[in-house]
Image (cartoon, rainbow, N blue to C red; front, side, top):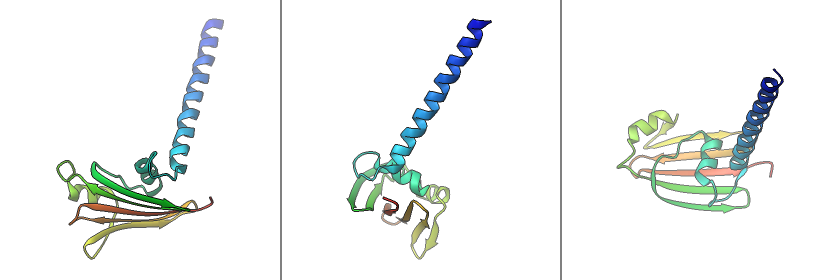
Length: 126
């Protein structure tokens, strides 16, 4: 009985440590303001927009602002399906998603004709 209890406690501690580690890693990615490390993951977490398979990227990060441009791989991504899954609002020939949160302000512009995504992200509280 003691062995079962001891094993259960150890398992509970291991699960708690795993959860805590994954949570801290997610916060690290969310707070990353670099163009190199976790760029796409950080943008996806802050904007809620999926960055699909891409063929090229261009990024600048100065002060508390990051501007990233992605060229979508149209051989692997259905653009109409992509639009429907990312909650964009159509304005003329562009698809836009923008928001102002307590942590950041962002504007994501998807140009279907060029198969490009432009992300303008301003970090707050830093």
